[in-house]
Image (cartoon, rainbow, N blue to C red):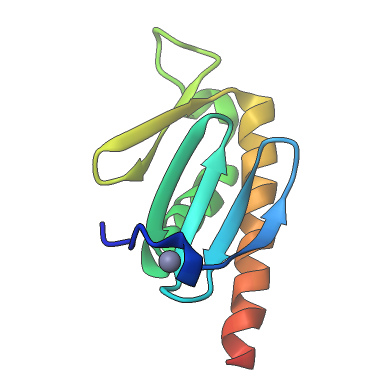
Length: 113
Ligand SMILES: [Zn+2]
């Protein structure tokens, strides 16, 4: 995924953060930096929106329905084309809050452009 290494020209604005991680936006190339625990991914806004959509859909379903037999307390979530994270119920709730609020802030940011 394209994101220039010359950080001097790229300023990242924290959109939302909580105890689980943070969502930041690069004001120059408009890529999202998503940090959840030790996981960090850089992605275009469109990819971020897909993750938010996925979280919203899962949030409507009881947590235990979404976990595997092998790991009944962990949910596996695809974050990019070939990365996944596992979250327990508390982490899921906290991550959902992080993404949902960041998404609201992002929508406001896009309206103001
Ligand atoms: Zn950038």
